[in-house]
Amino acid sequence: MKTRFFRHVAVCAVFLCMAGGLWAVDVQIKIPQVDIAGFAQGDIDAAMESFASTLETQIETDPDIDKYTDQPDLAQGFADAGSASALSGMFRTPRSYKIFSAAWGFGIAVSLPEMKAIDELDSGDFFREEGDAYGGIAVHPFNLSVGINLGFLLDGLRANAKFGYFDFTSEGIGSDFAFSSLSVGAGLNYSLIKAKSVPLGIVKWEGVVVSSGLFYQRNEAKISVTPDDNSYTSVNIREVDIHPSGSTDIIGTLTTEPEVHATITSSTFTVPLEVATAVRVLYIIDLMVGAGVDFNFGSSEVALSSSSRVDFEVDPSYGGTVSSDPGSIDVINKTTADPRFVRPRLMTALGISAGPVKFEIPFTVYFDSDGNTYVTGITAGFML
Image (cartoon, helix red, strand yellow):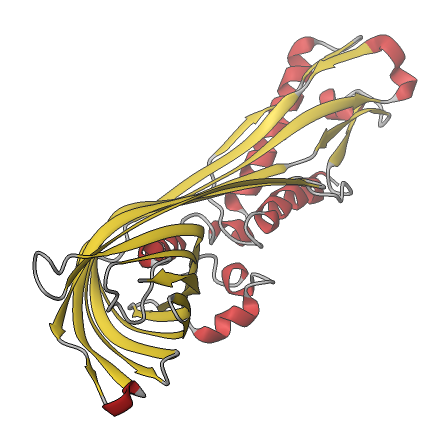
């Protein structure tokens, strides 16, 4: 019964944390302080310390947990997703506005070892089976961007800037979730080859544009989960567990209900270099294609902990002969990684125009050694 209790607590904690993965073993245990009439305090303390030692050993040596002791690939995935999301929320289709542009945009970046991993995200299988896997996500729900034509300084030169911020907290049954993002940056683009149109303007080639800048982003997600199933959260303590001459009568029950906390943060600076071209068809449809390389700085951190209060529930038959103060079990881990410094990418965007109003869907693919990062979203605004 004891061994199964310890193993269930440990494995449940692992399973809860990020869909069955992401764990490291740094165990801190404080067993409840118990006073039982008729038993020497030294014997009680020794028995409780034995339970603490057994539980700690079970957690630290369990093979199902050992493979989660470090997550460098996961931290790398979140760093890559974060840096890739830095440029989201800005127009990517034609930039040949005469005065200025303004837009709102939503962006999301997902890093995966391979495309088929998308089918496994809900179940977390590729984390559970490997213990550590390349993967990450960064979301920027609300970005505002502006562009200004600097043709009065240099023909074909334009500047752009963006700012995004979002803070969300949700409290649900058995779980708390908080998410925040910040994105800010500015850049320049220059028309290396000027735009050209065929007669009547049915097709317009937007020429070739080169761009660069400096962009910062920060994503943070926090989640706390308390399991609903308490079937594994108790173990009986008998007299004989405290002293060899004791009976097998149950004195009380150790109970615990683990709560898992996870905080995943990426904070990066990105310097992009890119070249792009685009065509406009029938005055309303824009199609952009381009390529680039990003230079990234910063880091990501996967911080995980399980906090459990441990109580000693006295059996009714022992009445007022037992008193106790609760204990605790805490398991803590942090893994950090830097974003990949040099990251090549291909990009495209499809836009629709109605006079000055613009709507577009961008798509970018980063080619990384451990997998790929995909960035998409929605951008809407106007150009004058």
